[in-house]
Image (cartoon, rainbow over all chains, first blue to last red; front, side, top):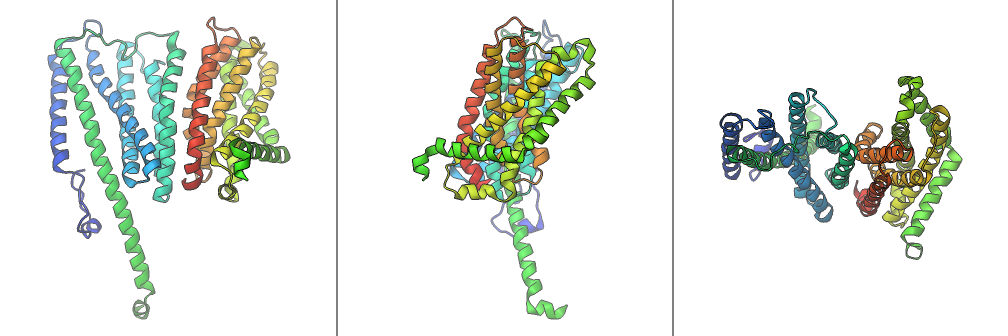
Length: 259
Length: 228
């Protein structure tokens, strides 16, 4: 992901040839450090929970992934609003990059939530409010990515995506409320509801280091995805220019005489 | 002209146009309503009607049928505009985008409410439903339908110009309408007295959903018509 050189890109002197920079390398190293600490404390050093036993270790991963996903969707929403206001490529790329990262983290959240369910309830899926909400929101943002993937003029595509980004984000609190009330009557253990507020010592440390690691990984991925998106746009511009140049050469008299 | 008529005048104009087209073409009457009744029959085939499952699940089945039918109605409503470049003509007409949006929502809401009225007869006859708590049922029907139309009109207009609109619209719209399905179903269950708790909070949630999307849609329809 860090250095993807292509011939077409290297012909442009000012264009960056990779998505890595000193800043992202430092960020990546710090994220990796926190990941190592989180793994060490979460899996090895911290003791099993009094109530949850070893399943608490899944929560160390679940909380950061869900937080990172919501952070990403928040960035998508802000970027969508900013795009409709400023109409610049920056906000469009930031919004779509964040949506992709958000979908990734949400998918991980659902998988680790389901795994927690298997060991706690004996089944992968119960209509637990948080998991249900995540599933609905995941599909909603998959729709965003589906529209993003449709080839279109960049401005048209950006406007479509910005509209979906805004329409989707205001639904998040409504889905939360609806699902909470819906399952409120049958409420049992929930993934996040079981966390002991007085969790202490190494457990708390594992949780916080995992949270920091999750956010840092999210930001690191986002920066790289943004830069990859930027390069992809430049590459497609370049591709179009080259195609135009080739057509011009084809139709020039000298070329016509050769063939 | 626009100034004298205002946003609501524009909305009435568009709503009248859509309803007139619908009355003449009779796509809703001729295709969407039979489809909705067919779905009610299919649910009965899928869920053994003699064991009471059908009766117990009536509110949910009713609203799932409404959601599926609303996708068809939306595709029809915006397909009409997209086919002959009418969306561009609407942009040039000088009508305010918010007015066009509210007009579309009004026409859609009326069409869907008519469909629901037929479906109510359908579930009364086919599923043997007794209707209790009529005021709550009416409030839920109106707020839920307004919410479906308000959110649906934004995505309907967005998807109309895409080649993959038939598959894309349900993918975009149905997860967005998940809270409407939950709230309308639970509210109706309460109303039919299957649950002890009051159903008015559900109607309030549906009202909030409708209001949020009406506001957002009114703002988003300008960029939607101009750039998307």
